[in-house]
Image 1 (cartoon, rainbow, N blue to C red):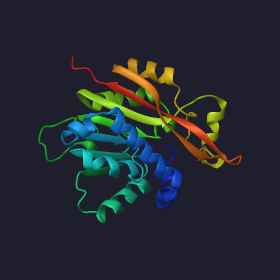
Image 2 (cartoon, helix red, strand yellow):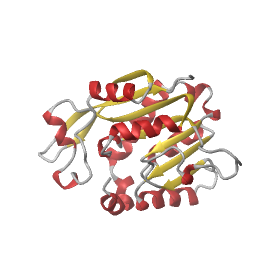
Image 3 (cartoon, helix red, strand yellow):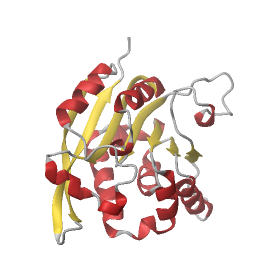
Length: 231
């Protein structure tokens, strides 16, 4: 991912109305598609990949036991840490600046729990991250390894619905964009190939976004759901 770009944008990230509103839409989708967040969420250990400044993290945190928030951008992680510093009541978010490439990454382990390695999670979330990742196959395998048996992934991103999907990004923001949205059938195949079961990739919501050519466009967002089996 293009860390320099995101480091530059971290300070003003939360000032973008679309970014804030979009994170709230993603949070609503999580509550709808992951009932455990509301039924037994306080017991859930969550891993968020590509947390940015924590817009989604802060919405999810009250529903879970712990949230390990990772991002490759130092600027984004520092912005999240600054938020937490002025909100001492939020104690269950652990920001980590790391490129997560394997489940036993030392930086996401819990040093308070002796002998627990690798740490495993009940739920993995990400929002507007998948289109930045060079190898979806590799990141899905890493996610699978990070889950407890029976754990879930719930990943949201805009959909590749054809050539018009390219308009989601301004030309100046193409740095670090690996694909113009998520193609449903391709993503389902990749998730099944990574050993997930109960795989579903479906539209979760739509959002109007200003586009560079003028005006705005409605973009569909998908949620990618899968479970790690117990065997």
